[in-house]
Image (cartoon, rainbow, N blue to C red; front, side, top):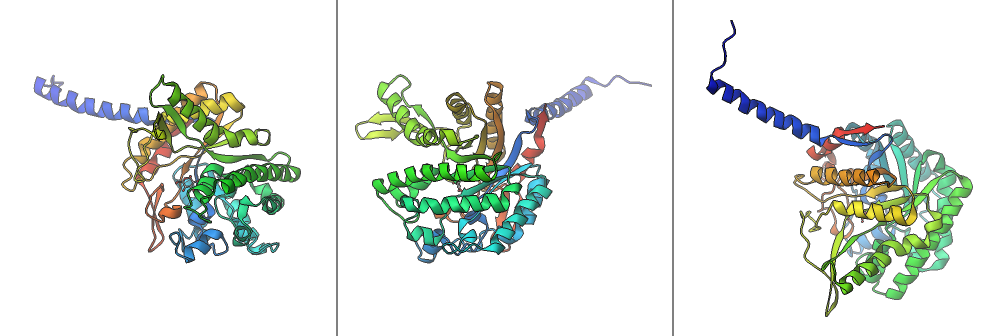
Length: 419
Ligand code: BGC
């Protein structure tokens, strides 16, 4: 016989069910719908993970004690299979990696057949794992012999980069779906030629200017060299754009500061190469609130959660940047990097979710966003900050090289594709 539950019991069940319901709604809300075919991946770069890149300029400077030592890094050179297994396991369908020029051509004109064969195995392994391949040709490290000839600051070195790009197209091109010739030309130029923090530690605006222009030239020539071998190759760069906002919304000076920063930092390079890009690779980390004072342009107080690097996060900025790129160039956009240093792993999942949601909104509003690569699959060598920052979906124990998937990586299981 059925007995009506007492009021007390009913209250108890109601409370319990409302918790369960709330949890279910919460779970439902966490499902992120993205268009069918959308690439969800992680990004990395050769010197930050491979280990023992003894023929490049960073390694050289590391031995001189001018930047932290990279050593074995995450030993990705030997553990790439394991890393791609993890990428697959956590639900990714793409990877952005880079090829180390100094491995391919350790000394001028001498190409290392074994290194080429190694990258072939890496790319084949990605294919076998069902991971679409985006490949960067230059991610901040130069062969030492190129650095000794003044790197990209010297226009006669452009030919060497183009020769290398052509070689990769011929030898490995069949195994590459998406190309980035150059990673973050501004960051590279600023750090190496203006701020004096990265090799060759120059503080020379003229050098910076030459390098910047030469990088654009190098991209354009490499673009055509690759296209000659592979007419259907999809080629671009990975461009770090900052979302700039006027501190005082209606102040003409602050608005001018935004205009200037947008032009010089975000669009100058892209305008130079606009006829040689099949898509736009967007790296998004920063937003700036700019105000003009007596001492020039000042970055005003930012709010928003702070990463371990002290960088404030602002997910909506990715939306504004995508829409602006869409308006200016009308090309497909891939988020080639977006990530957070967060050792406690208590911010990463929200960070990714919110950025993906803003990508979604951009798609709804007409932009052709085709993929998102989180920076980075694993913890890695963070340039002059060494091994302290933890950007990884996967934690690395540098003593044992043990990989441990962080809980935030669960987020990729909550993505569903809609047609
Ligand atoms: C670079 C990466 C770097 C990441 C985090 C990007 O600017 O492409 O090499 O590790 O930012 O700082």
